[in-house]
Image (cartoon, rainbow, N blue to C red; front, side, top):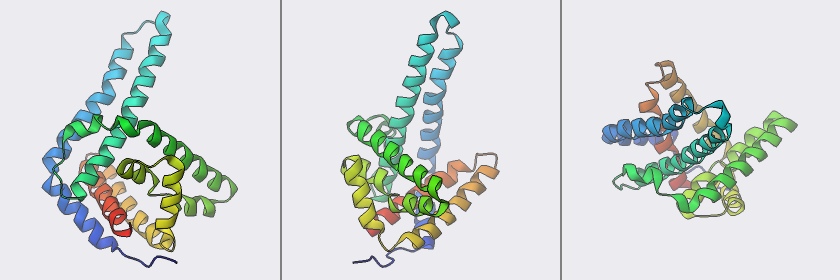
Length: 204
């Protein structure tokens, strides 16, 4: 049975905007923490001699792991805010229990979308929307990569054109944030991400 549209683009964006304003101070601190955590391995890398090239590789791996877990944490934070819970900065670094599942789903999702764009652009767009909620399902429900992909496929059945419209709107919002010397992303990134989790909650 196909889904019928159960969300409003405008309502989701407005919800994200209001929640962003409510937690603006938190998001500013959160982004500063994320930037600091991301820059630290790079700063350490400056002081590593070429003779110890393997330490540079270890620092890169550390950066990759840290960036991935912060991505998981950011999703969990916006889910908490969407659900009316108080966000906590420490959440950025505490969701290690789904690290490998999240990494797995991002690899599978990226591969599927890449193949779709390689074959023809249209399948890539459709598949990117079909499995759009898979990373959220991993973080929110603790699903494995394949299970999350299947569940996302069920959730988005009959909604792909609606989701394409929503994705287009949020993309424009983030582009505006980038045009404002990237500082605008402090406002637009949380707004659009919360809007996405709001849509995710409504269609699930």
